[in-house]
Image (cartoon, rainbow, N blue to C red; front, side, top):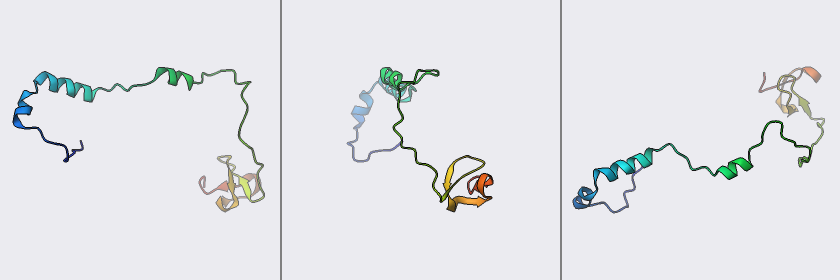
Length: 98
């Protein structure tokens, strides 16, 4: 645990004034595994399987494969020709999959 050395230190009297119950309560609070989650926000971002997405539109512009690119036959990703490890055409393999 990090210590802030700039904070004022408690005197011996102040340390004795704190009861054992206060210390136990503080310790229990610090070690609780509960996380504050906004349930409404979590429910808004949750997409259920089989949800009707027919009204949704794509907002991503799709660019066709360029002449200096190839599709890896193992991972099926489009890479720049500098990532070609071996093969040509439909048997091309990228450096990541090689």
